Length: 124
Image (cartoon, rainbow, N blue to C red; front, top):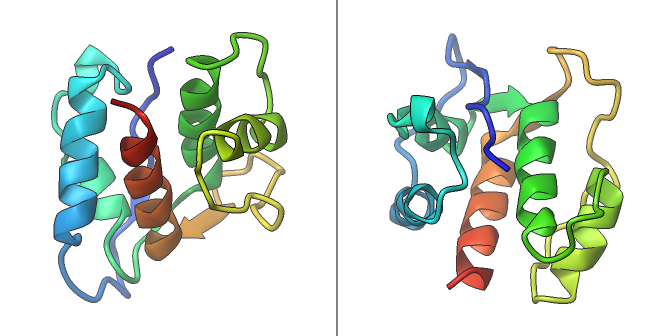
């Protein structure tokens, strides 16, 4: 499954560049086909992972579900996805992520970074 780029609020609050770990994770996930061909520019995911950035929770959740579906095709929600990925060593929690699907439901850039780095670590 391919995932669309997250919408990022860049107006204020970003406190520096994406970490080298996040940049490497985005490059690896792109190489592994996690992002749609139309999303050839990885700048949006890198921006989403910057300290102080905010990205749509629904899009990050979609990435997590897509990753879990590579292990078990039947996964359809972020809670089940997190459980499947935890068995592979992923250690982020989705219990406090917003769930309404509204564009103003956002995750902090630091959370996005954690997701990207951990997903990249568990997929060869």
